[in-house]
Image 1 (cartoon, rainbow, N blue to C red):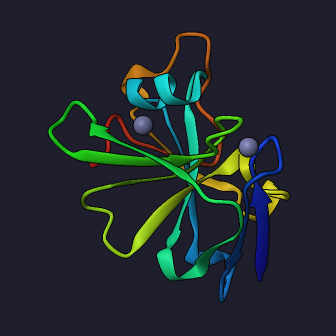
Image 2 (image 1 turned 90 degrees about the vertical axis):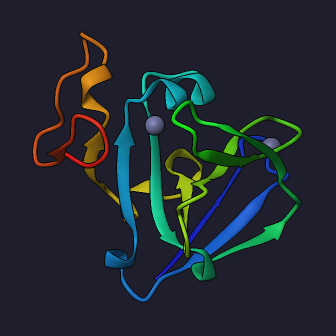
Length: 138
Ligand SMILES: [Zn+2]
Ligand SMILES: [Zn+2]
């Protein structure tokens, strides 16, 4: 399957080629770091193999920082409009994480779980049918 996407202003376009939707794992993350970067209550990204992702138009701006737990986190975004396109930690290996809202048809890759539920906003309910983790591992 092919999933296309891009940033808000249209400068950046990308293509994702997957054998099947099972190659991607979309998840919601309530951690403070995701709140800050997205300016929202949570981050939502689709984890998929680097080799399946290709920029077809424009080039991304990169920001690297410690995510607060000693792990270097890299984010790549449109330098013109600021849309986040990719993020990956130092331990992400062969995978990258694509910001879900930049997909043209996000319903192609629905979420499977939620992380960092211990810092979920008080008004935000658990999403039925997904797994819920307090942080990352447990
Ligand atoms: Zn843009
Ligand atoms: Zn997060």
